[in-house]
Image: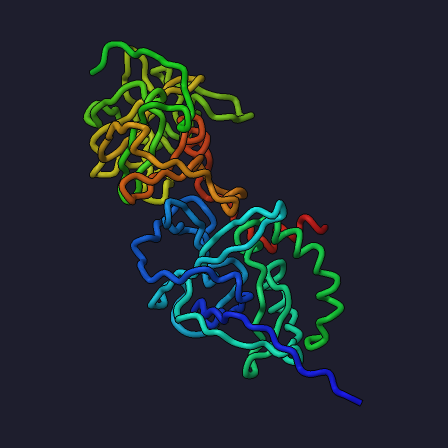
Length: 179
Length: 197
């Protein structure tokens, strides 16, 4: 009897500050920018999306997840104020198979990690609610449950709403920790 | 100051050959030149008493409330900074802060009023400076889809010499100005719950 070898998936671990961490698939992280002067403030939009990145003759929305409603960061410096800030440019294909882009503000250099299949984890109800519509799945990283997110859902409210609506029953079924 | 106002059909930013950059404190708006009827000094603004703001409505407000007029025949609103006589008629003056929220008092650095065209009557927006720019110097970008749910008066993002300007229209600005300032903020999660229920 031969045992199936353990599989793992490479990913980038992003530290958004204030205890908010997430992972994205390797191909989703396109570029890392240190020049904060490329970030420009935009008023009258949701607070966590209050900046855009002007780069390569394009304008990309930049999300600060520590400021997202419902995220309730609970560690480290005050949300939105932790330094330094790096800008991770993410890329993905939208529903029409068109390339789309957005940026995530992080407070530390992205860390490349391997996610073994056996490290997949179940979030608490609170965490599942926080990441509803964003997380594809979760994994255990040194005792912390980290979401692997779908980049499109960070920047497209419709995509996130649709994902949240479709995954809610499944999430309730999976989540047994806080029952 | 000005004696006559010539009205041109309003065009969007994308079709405009020339644009006007309205510098506020901390941000700048850009509109098609055809939407700007006149420029006036803030020295010509007539103050509106706070009590009067509660009695009257702005000219272009889409409201089911009965509109009332003050003694000068000008409709005003809670967000109005003052009244400006332009070409024989009075129009409401609005002022915005760096977050594009209406302020009731004219900001000290605002020196000029841009009188903007609107089908229901002109209105004015106070600003620090006004610049005319050729359309070729502007890079227009559509609003990211992330802003689809809430973007206030923004209709485009515009880059000029590496600086971000906020593209708008006179109609979008007035719709924003006439709104109460405490907008309801609904998170994606709350929105998702509403959709599911």
